[in-house]
Length: 216
Image (cartoon, rainbow, N blue to C red; front, top):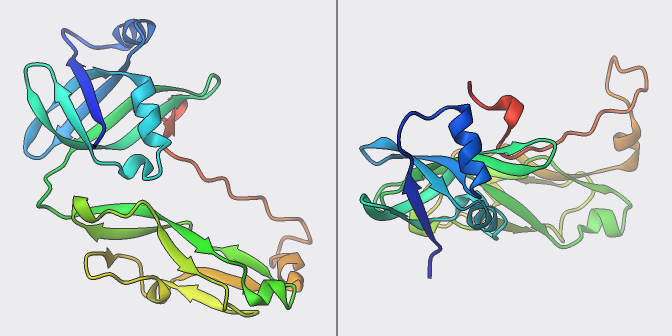
């Protein structure tokens, strides 16, 4: 059974003060748009949205949206904002979904197993792409894409072309793009040209937007 999100339409002029009132009442502001309909300003339950975002399919989850006086339909979350200090949801954007129309979206890649290049030769498995861009019908959206890397040797590479290619899914990345590879410890330790031996800063992946990044 798909999740059912029950939303209430927001009335009157909406501004920061109105948004605060919505949040004090235990709801968060939301906007629903797409499928040829005008955007609708809504209020939704943050606990329910958090449960969807933390599910296996995450923001790619297709759910039923019921809006008072405006009927029901299918939707998914396309953007969300957190208050950075308290790490609380403060706003979401949802998009209506037509089940017979293909969507373009990002899906996580999950690497399975320990490569022989790591186990036997002491290499390091480096996942270059944690998400890939795909196109498919809503009913065919995978929660993630699995790829077995146990046979990957030292300097071995997994490319987009090596991922499972079901007929229902079209990859939008270049087929020769690197998803993951096994590198040697020496390669990992070598500083990039021009860095003078300084360690590289780790990349921080972010989902959604913080309050400071929200549109004004």
